[in-house]
Each structure stands twice: as C-alpha cells, then as structure tokens.
Length: 305
Image (cartoon, rainbow, N blue to C red; front, side):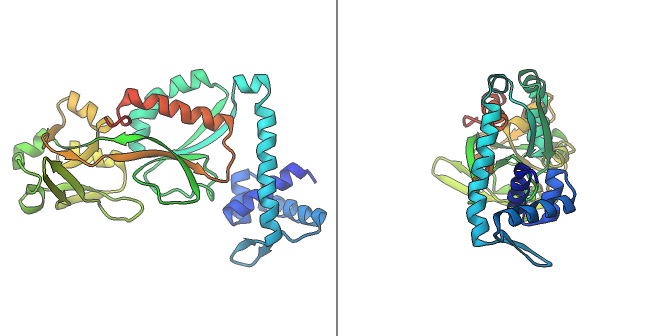
C-alpha cells in the first residue's frame, strides 16, 4: 500500500462524501479508492468511515485522522514546491470556476500573460454562473460576485463591481428613454432578468440619488441564468439590463449600449475568490490568486470602478 495514495484517497472521500466522487476527482477507479481506504483502516486498526448504501460518514477516529492527514499532505506539497526550482516555477493542475462573462471579458484576454509567467501550470477552468460544490467537485477556487454565505470557505475580496443601467439604441428607439428608474416598474418598459443560482430568482436593484432611494425589479420580458446570454439579450434590444463596467465597456465603445440614469448610483457588488478552508493553499493557487488581484484594477471590476 502506498501510504500517500491511501491518505489522499481517504481525505478525498471525507471531503466529497462519496467513494465514487472521490475516485472521479483523483482519476482512479472506485475499486482502487475503496481498497486504499480499506488497507489504511487495516494498517491503523481503526474504522475511519461508516458506510451505508446512501452515505459515507467519517467516524470520530476518522475525523481526528483526517485533520492530521490533510496537514501531512500540505506539508508534503510544501516540501516539493519549496525546492528552488519549484518555487521559481510553480507547476501542476489548477481547477478553477468563474462566471462566464468574467471569463470572456477579463480572464481569457489576459491568459496568455499568465501562461508566459507560469508555463508549467495547467488551468482547468469551469465557466458558469451556477453554484459550484467546491469540495465535492474538487475545485481549487471559484470567483463569484455577491456576498458569500458558505462558512466552509475562505475568501479574498477582490474589489467591488460598480453597476450601471443600460439599454440598446434599438430598444430606446422602439420604447423611448426612461427618465426615472420607477418607469421600469410602472410603464411599458421591460427589463432582462438575471436568475441568481442561490435563489433561482431575478434580483431587484436599489438606486440612490441624494436623499432619494428606490428599489426596482422591473417587468422581465426574458430571464436567463448565464451572464453572456444576459448581455447578448440586452445587445439584441430585448430590454433594460444592469451591468458591471467590464461587461458594458465594449458595447459602449461600439455604440451598442446607452447608459441610463447616470445621475443615480447603484449599490456595488463585492467580488470574491473563494477556496475550501480546510484545503492547503498551494503555490500554484497562491500565484493564480495574486495574478487575478493584480489584473483587476486594469480591467475595472475592482477598486470600486
């Protein structure tokens, strides 16, 4: 039995709650993972996991061993990456998940720079606006907008997205230009709704002007759960939409979007990069996080812009 492989297999089963999911994330067969955990239990002469047909639960002894195991695995990773050659050139596979418009408008144009700096890091990037089970899906980190509510995650605040209200020239030509945010609720105007993964419902937006404050939900003509589709619907003239600056910039430059209510301010949206609290921050993850933080001020979402 390879003790490292057995320890890693056990830790992954605990984190995912499933032998099947652990095997998938480790690129092993379920049989191999099961045998490694059984061999580990036999060697330690203690039961680490309780197995039923539906669930896998860690025992009290298993929970103690898990905490020690992840520290040992982290120390081993440090020992390898602490070598001079590895420290200079971090390497390995990094699994990240980011919102689709953030990938399209911010990360992808800059990825050649990241690859030039860190040619030995392989990025596996999930691009979606869905809720991601970081531990269950073995994702190293996610980038998300909005306040984080998952207490099992550690997070670094990247900045605040400054939102604006926009519509296409075609939409405004057909339906006119609203002069007050309340018109989006009470008149013939229509909005495009963005369905947030946490609730499955479109958000309302609050606007402020001096002492005046108004919350607008609007009358959605279309609601979508993907940021790129949301922007495409706005460019097609389907309705009014709310966008962070980095998503609106190209459309504004090409004359495909027109800003509305410019004397009003919208509440900003925080942007985070999050990772499991019990997961060691490897050098490859650390340089990726630092690169994203460095990148953002030039792209606009952070620093309150």
